[in-house]
Image (tube, one colour):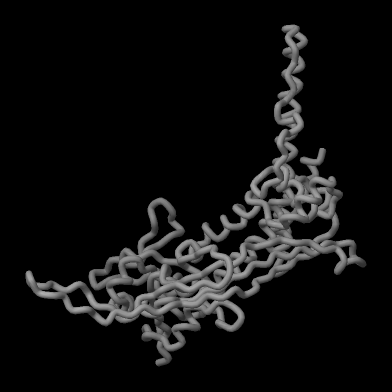
Length: 377
Protein backbone atom coordinates (compact mmCIF):
# COMPACT_ATOMS: atom_id res chain seq x y z
CA UNK A 1 0.00 0.00 0.00
CA UNK A 2 1.06 3.55 -0.68
CA UNK A 3 0.59 4.46 2.99
CA UNK A 4 3.16 1.82 3.95
CA UNK A 5 5.60 3.31 1.43
CA UNK A 6 5.00 6.80 2.83
CA UNK A 7 5.50 5.64 6.44
CA UNK A 8 8.69 3.85 5.40
CA UNK A 9 10.05 6.99 3.75
CA UNK A 10 9.11 9.21 6.71
CA UNK A 11 10.98 6.84 9.01
CA UNK A 12 14.01 7.02 6.72
CA UNK A 13 13.90 10.82 6.69
CA UNK A 14 14.01 10.81 10.49
CA UNK A 15 17.47 9.29 10.22
CA UNK A 16 18.60 11.75 7.55
CA UNK A 17 17.66 14.98 9.35
CA UNK A 18 20.70 15.18 11.65
CA UNK A 19 23.18 15.00 8.79
CA UNK A 20 21.27 17.31 6.43
CA UNK A 21 22.16 20.97 6.05
CA UNK A 22 21.20 23.92 3.86
CA UNK A 23 19.30 23.03 0.69
CA UNK A 24 19.22 19.35 1.64
CA UNK A 25 17.42 20.17 4.89
CA UNK A 26 14.98 22.42 3.02
CA UNK A 27 14.28 19.61 0.54
CA UNK A 28 13.57 17.18 3.39
CA UNK A 29 11.19 19.72 4.96
CA UNK A 30 9.24 19.99 1.71
CA UNK A 31 9.21 16.23 1.20
CA UNK A 32 7.84 15.61 4.71
CA UNK A 33 5.04 18.15 4.15
CA UNK A 34 4.12 16.56 0.83
CA UNK A 35 4.19 13.01 2.17
CA UNK A 36 2.09 13.75 5.24
CA UNK A 37 -0.47 15.60 3.14
CA UNK A 38 -0.62 12.72 0.65
CA UNK A 39 -1.06 10.22 3.46
CA UNK A 40 -3.96 12.25 4.88
CA UNK A 41 -5.57 12.43 1.43
CA UNK A 42 -5.35 8.63 1.03
CA UNK A 43 -6.89 8.12 4.47
CA UNK A 44 -9.73 10.55 3.62
CA UNK A 45 -10.40 8.77 0.32
CA UNK A 46 -10.46 5.40 2.09
CA UNK A 47 -12.98 6.69 4.62
CA UNK A 48 -15.21 8.02 1.82
CA UNK A 49 -15.18 4.65 0.05
CA UNK A 50 -16.01 2.88 3.29
CA UNK A 51 -19.00 5.16 3.87
CA UNK A 52 -20.25 4.38 0.35
CA UNK A 53 -19.94 0.62 1.00
CA UNK A 54 -21.97 1.03 4.19
CA UNK A 55 -24.73 2.82 2.26
CA UNK A 56 -24.83 0.07 -0.36
CA UNK A 57 -25.01 -2.61 2.33
CA UNK A 58 -27.82 -0.75 4.09
CA UNK A 59 -29.75 -0.54 0.82
CA UNK A 60 -29.46 -4.28 0.25
CA UNK A 61 -30.93 -4.97 3.69
CA UNK A 62 -33.74 -2.40 3.72
CA UNK A 63 -34.57 -2.38 0.03
CA UNK A 64 -34.57 1.45 0.01
CA UNK A 65 -33.04 3.29 -2.94
CA UNK A 66 -29.45 4.34 -2.32
CA UNK A 67 -28.51 7.99 -2.63
CA UNK A 68 -25.11 8.70 -4.05
CA UNK A 69 -22.57 10.74 -2.17
CA UNK A 70 -23.56 14.36 -2.68
CA UNK A 71 -19.92 15.32 -2.89
CA UNK A 72 -19.52 13.02 -5.92
CA UNK A 73 -22.32 14.66 -7.90
CA UNK A 74 -21.33 17.09 -10.66
CA UNK A 75 -21.16 20.64 -9.29
CA UNK A 76 -23.66 23.09 -10.70
CA UNK A 77 -23.06 26.75 -11.44
CA UNK A 78 -19.30 26.35 -11.82
CA UNK A 79 -18.26 29.96 -11.31
CA UNK A 80 -14.47 29.60 -11.28
CA UNK A 81 -14.25 32.58 -8.94
CA UNK A 82 -10.89 33.03 -7.19
CA UNK A 83 -12.37 31.66 -3.95
CA UNK A 84 -14.06 28.64 -5.60
CA UNK A 85 -12.97 25.00 -5.41
CA UNK A 86 -13.09 24.78 -9.22
CA UNK A 87 -10.63 27.62 -9.70
CA UNK A 88 -8.28 26.29 -6.99
CA UNK A 89 -8.18 22.91 -8.73
CA UNK A 90 -7.56 24.44 -12.15
CA UNK A 91 -4.83 26.77 -10.86
CA UNK A 92 -2.92 24.03 -9.04
CA UNK A 93 -3.30 21.53 -11.90
CA UNK A 94 -1.84 24.15 -14.23
CA UNK A 95 1.14 24.67 -11.91
CA UNK A 96 1.72 20.92 -11.85
CA UNK A 97 1.89 20.90 -15.63
CA UNK A 98 -1.13 18.67 -16.04
CA UNK A 99 -3.75 18.91 -18.79
CA UNK A 100 -6.68 21.26 -18.27
CA UNK A 101 -10.16 21.32 -19.74
CA UNK A 102 -11.03 24.25 -21.98
CA UNK A 103 -13.08 25.75 -19.15
CA UNK A 104 -10.23 25.41 -16.66
CA UNK A 105 -7.64 26.84 -19.06
CA UNK A 106 -9.84 29.84 -19.82
CA UNK A 107 -10.36 30.57 -16.12
CA UNK A 108 -6.65 30.36 -15.24
CA UNK A 109 -5.59 32.42 -18.28
CA UNK A 110 -8.18 35.10 -17.56
CA UNK A 111 -7.28 35.51 -13.88
CA UNK A 112 -3.82 34.13 -13.12
CA UNK A 113 -4.48 35.05 -9.49
CA UNK A 114 -3.48 32.66 -6.75
CA UNK A 115 -6.57 30.93 -5.24
CA UNK A 116 -7.91 32.51 -2.06
CA UNK A 117 -7.51 29.30 -0.03
CA UNK A 118 -3.88 28.87 -1.11
CA UNK A 119 -3.17 32.54 -0.45
CA UNK A 120 -4.65 32.30 3.04
CA UNK A 121 -2.28 29.43 3.82
CA UNK A 122 0.70 31.51 2.71
CA UNK A 123 -0.50 34.56 4.66
CA UNK A 124 -0.88 32.34 7.74
CA UNK A 125 2.91 32.04 7.78
CA UNK A 126 3.08 35.83 8.19
CA UNK A 127 0.43 35.87 10.92
CA UNK A 128 2.17 33.25 13.05
CA UNK A 129 5.63 34.78 12.72
CA UNK A 130 6.55 36.51 16.04
CA UNK A 131 7.89 39.59 14.23
CA UNK A 132 5.56 39.93 11.23
CA UNK A 133 2.52 39.51 13.47
CA UNK A 134 3.64 42.54 15.54
CA UNK A 135 4.59 45.05 12.86
CA UNK A 136 2.00 47.21 11.09
CA UNK A 137 1.51 45.15 7.91
CA UNK A 138 -0.89 46.21 5.18
CA UNK A 139 -1.91 44.81 1.78
CA UNK A 140 -2.43 47.92 -0.38
CA UNK A 141 -1.69 47.74 -4.14
CA UNK A 142 1.06 50.04 -5.40
CA UNK A 143 3.13 52.65 -3.58
CA UNK A 144 1.68 53.99 -0.35
CA UNK A 145 2.29 56.88 2.07
CA UNK A 146 1.76 56.62 5.83
CA UNK A 147 1.20 59.84 7.80
CA UNK A 148 3.44 60.10 10.87
CA UNK A 149 3.30 62.74 13.58
CA UNK A 150 6.17 65.20 13.54
CA UNK A 151 6.28 67.90 16.18
CA UNK A 152 3.04 68.15 18.11
CA UNK A 153 1.78 69.85 21.24
CA UNK A 154 -0.49 68.47 23.93
CA UNK A 155 -3.96 69.81 24.58
CA UNK A 156 -3.86 72.96 26.71
CA UNK A 157 -6.19 74.26 29.39
CA UNK A 158 -7.94 77.49 28.40
CA UNK A 159 -9.87 79.86 30.64
CA UNK A 160 -13.55 80.46 29.91
CA UNK A 161 -13.99 83.14 27.28
CA UNK A 162 -10.35 82.96 26.21
CA UNK A 163 -9.48 81.91 22.65
CA UNK A 164 -7.23 78.92 22.16
CA UNK A 165 -3.86 79.41 20.50
CA UNK A 166 -3.07 77.21 17.49
CA UNK A 167 -0.08 74.95 18.03
CA UNK A 168 2.57 74.34 15.38
CA UNK A 169 1.85 70.63 14.85
CA UNK A 170 3.43 68.93 11.84
CA UNK A 171 2.82 65.66 10.02
CA UNK A 172 5.43 63.83 7.98
CA UNK A 173 4.98 60.82 5.72
CA UNK A 174 6.69 57.49 5.24
CA UNK A 175 6.80 56.44 1.59
CA UNK A 176 6.74 52.72 0.79
CA UNK A 177 7.52 51.49 -2.71
CA UNK A 178 7.01 48.04 -4.29
CA UNK A 179 10.21 46.02 -4.51
CA UNK A 180 10.43 42.50 -5.93
CA UNK A 181 10.90 39.62 -3.54
CA UNK A 182 11.49 36.31 -5.35
CA UNK A 183 12.03 32.70 -4.29
CA UNK A 184 12.49 29.83 -6.74
CA UNK A 185 12.73 26.10 -6.14
CA UNK A 186 13.34 23.25 -8.59
CA UNK A 187 11.73 19.85 -8.13
CA UNK A 188 11.46 16.75 -10.31
CA UNK A 189 8.35 16.10 -12.40
CA UNK A 190 7.11 13.68 -9.70
CA UNK A 191 5.09 16.63 -8.45
CA UNK A 192 2.63 15.90 -11.28
CA UNK A 193 1.49 12.73 -9.50
CA UNK A 194 0.63 14.47 -6.22
CA UNK A 195 -2.97 14.99 -5.21
CA UNK A 196 -4.18 18.61 -5.26
CA UNK A 197 -4.10 18.90 -1.46
CA UNK A 198 -0.65 17.32 -1.19
CA UNK A 199 0.73 19.57 -3.92
CA UNK A 200 -0.75 22.67 -2.29
CA UNK A 201 0.81 21.74 1.07
CA UNK A 202 4.20 21.25 -0.57
CA UNK A 203 3.89 24.51 -2.48
CA UNK A 204 3.00 26.55 0.60
CA UNK A 205 5.76 24.92 2.64
CA UNK A 206 8.48 25.24 -0.01
CA UNK A 207 7.71 28.78 -1.15
CA UNK A 208 5.42 30.51 1.36
CA UNK A 209 7.65 30.16 4.36
CA UNK A 210 10.67 31.37 2.37
CA UNK A 211 8.86 34.63 1.62
CA UNK A 212 8.03 34.88 5.33
CA UNK A 213 11.67 34.38 6.35
CA UNK A 214 12.86 36.99 3.86
CA UNK A 215 10.38 39.56 5.18
CA UNK A 216 11.41 38.76 8.78
CA UNK A 217 15.08 39.33 7.92
CA UNK A 218 14.26 42.57 6.11
CA UNK A 219 12.54 44.02 9.20
CA UNK A 220 15.93 44.00 10.93
CA UNK A 221 18.62 44.13 8.24
CA UNK A 222 17.05 45.43 5.02
CA UNK A 223 19.39 47.87 3.28
CA UNK A 224 16.68 50.17 1.95
CA UNK A 225 18.10 49.90 -1.59
CA UNK A 226 15.61 48.04 -3.80
CA UNK A 227 14.32 46.38 -0.64
CA UNK A 228 12.80 47.19 2.72
CA UNK A 229 14.89 49.17 5.23
CA UNK A 230 15.52 47.41 8.52
CA UNK A 231 15.49 48.61 12.11
CA UNK A 232 19.21 47.94 12.59
CA UNK A 233 19.99 49.84 9.38
CA UNK A 234 17.84 52.78 10.50
CA UNK A 235 19.35 52.88 14.00
CA UNK A 236 22.89 52.82 12.60
CA UNK A 237 24.21 54.42 15.79
CA UNK A 238 23.56 52.37 18.92
CA UNK A 239 21.68 54.04 21.76
CA UNK A 240 24.12 52.66 24.31
CA UNK A 241 26.09 49.63 25.48
CA UNK A 242 25.80 46.93 28.11
CA UNK A 243 28.54 45.28 30.16
CA UNK A 244 31.14 43.53 28.00
CA UNK A 245 31.60 40.41 30.14
CA UNK A 246 27.90 39.77 30.59
CA UNK A 247 24.76 41.88 30.69
CA UNK A 248 23.68 42.93 34.19
CA UNK A 249 20.46 43.94 35.92
CA UNK A 250 21.58 47.58 35.80
CA UNK A 251 22.01 47.25 32.01
CA UNK A 252 18.42 46.06 31.58
CA UNK A 253 17.13 48.92 33.72
CA UNK A 254 19.11 51.40 31.62
CA UNK A 255 17.68 49.92 28.41
CA UNK A 256 14.10 50.15 29.66
CA UNK A 257 14.60 53.67 31.01
CA UNK A 258 16.01 54.98 27.72
CA UNK A 259 12.79 54.31 25.76
CA UNK A 260 10.09 56.98 25.77
CA UNK A 261 7.03 56.21 27.92
CA UNK A 262 4.62 56.51 24.99
CA UNK A 263 6.34 53.53 23.29
CA UNK A 264 7.17 51.51 26.41
CA UNK A 265 3.58 50.36 27.00
CA UNK A 266 3.70 48.14 23.87
CA UNK A 267 7.44 47.47 23.91
CA UNK A 268 9.14 44.08 23.74
CA UNK A 269 12.75 42.95 23.96
CA UNK A 270 14.26 41.40 20.83
CA UNK A 271 17.67 39.74 20.63
CA UNK A 272 19.54 36.73 19.18
CA UNK A 273 18.75 33.40 20.84
CA UNK A 274 22.36 32.77 21.90
CA UNK A 275 22.66 36.18 23.56
CA UNK A 276 19.51 35.60 25.62
CA UNK A 277 20.55 32.19 26.90
CA UNK A 278 24.20 33.10 27.61
CA UNK A 279 23.88 36.65 28.96
CA UNK A 280 20.33 37.49 29.98
CA UNK A 281 18.45 34.44 31.23
CA UNK A 282 20.32 34.12 34.53
CA UNK A 283 20.29 37.80 35.55
CA UNK A 284 19.00 38.54 39.06
CA UNK A 285 17.78 41.81 40.56
CA UNK A 286 19.28 43.47 43.66
CA UNK A 287 17.24 41.14 45.87
CA UNK A 288 18.58 38.01 44.19
CA UNK A 289 15.34 37.34 42.29
CA UNK A 290 15.45 36.32 38.62
CA UNK A 291 14.34 39.02 36.18
CA UNK A 292 13.45 36.56 33.42
CA UNK A 293 10.30 34.48 33.80
CA UNK A 294 8.85 31.74 31.60
CA UNK A 295 5.25 31.90 30.39
CA UNK A 296 3.29 29.35 32.46
CA UNK A 297 1.23 28.39 29.38
CA UNK A 298 4.22 28.24 27.03
CA UNK A 299 7.54 27.56 28.80
CA UNK A 300 9.53 28.43 25.66
CA UNK A 301 8.31 32.04 25.93
CA UNK A 302 9.91 34.47 28.38
CA UNK A 303 9.51 37.99 29.68
CA UNK A 304 12.07 40.35 31.20
CA UNK A 305 10.68 42.42 34.05
CA UNK A 306 7.23 41.99 32.55
CA UNK A 307 8.22 42.80 28.95
CA UNK A 308 7.92 39.96 26.44
CA UNK A 309 11.06 38.61 24.78
CA UNK A 310 11.35 37.75 21.07
CA UNK A 311 14.33 35.66 20.02
CA UNK A 312 15.33 36.11 16.38
CA UNK A 313 18.69 35.23 14.87
CA UNK A 314 18.22 37.85 12.14
CA UNK A 315 19.25 40.36 14.81
CA UNK A 316 23.05 40.85 14.63
CA UNK A 317 25.18 39.25 17.33
CA UNK A 318 25.40 41.17 20.64
CA UNK A 319 22.48 43.49 19.79
CA UNK A 320 19.53 44.05 22.11
CA UNK A 321 16.48 45.90 20.77
CA UNK A 322 13.71 47.30 22.94
CA UNK A 323 10.71 49.00 21.43
CA UNK A 324 7.27 48.93 19.83
CA UNK A 325 7.18 46.94 16.58
CA UNK A 326 3.95 48.67 15.51
CA UNK A 327 6.17 51.60 14.59
CA UNK A 328 7.54 49.51 11.72
CA UNK A 329 5.38 49.80 8.57
CA UNK A 330 5.39 47.11 5.89
CA UNK A 331 3.14 46.98 2.85
CA UNK A 332 2.64 44.01 0.55
CA UNK A 333 1.91 45.89 -2.67
CA UNK A 334 1.26 42.65 -4.52
CA UNK A 335 0.50 39.43 -2.70
CA UNK A 336 2.74 36.43 -3.50
CA UNK A 337 2.05 34.99 -6.95
CA UNK A 338 3.25 31.51 -7.90
CA UNK A 339 4.21 30.42 -11.41
CA UNK A 340 5.94 27.35 -12.83
CA UNK A 341 8.19 26.65 -15.80
CA UNK A 342 9.69 23.39 -17.06
CA UNK A 343 11.71 24.87 -19.94
CA UNK A 344 14.65 25.89 -17.75
CA UNK A 345 15.15 22.33 -16.55
CA UNK A 346 14.56 20.46 -19.78
CA UNK A 347 17.55 18.13 -19.38
CA UNK A 348 16.64 17.03 -15.85
CA UNK A 349 12.89 16.72 -16.35
CA UNK A 350 12.27 19.11 -13.48
CA UNK A 351 9.93 22.04 -13.01
CA UNK A 352 10.94 25.33 -11.44
CA UNK A 353 8.42 27.07 -9.18
CA UNK A 354 8.69 30.75 -8.44
CA UNK A 355 6.95 32.84 -5.78
CA UNK A 356 7.16 36.60 -6.26
CA UNK A 357 5.76 39.38 -4.11
CA UNK A 358 6.11 43.16 -4.19
CA UNK A 359 6.78 44.70 -0.79
CA UNK A 360 8.54 47.44 1.15
CA UNK A 361 8.98 48.39 4.78
CA UNK A 362 10.48 51.10 7.01
CA UNK A 363 10.70 52.10 10.64
CA UNK A 364 8.28 55.04 10.65
CA UNK A 365 9.25 56.33 14.11
CA UNK A 366 12.92 55.72 15.02
CA UNK A 367 12.21 56.97 18.56
CA UNK A 368 10.04 53.89 19.12
CA UNK A 369 13.18 51.74 19.49
CA UNK A 370 16.47 51.76 21.37
CA UNK A 371 19.43 49.58 20.38
CA UNK A 372 22.17 48.45 22.74
CA UNK A 373 25.38 46.61 21.85
CA UNK A 374 28.08 44.91 23.91
CA UNK A 375 30.70 47.31 25.25
CA UNK A 376 34.21 46.94 23.82
CA UNK A 377 35.91 47.45 27.18
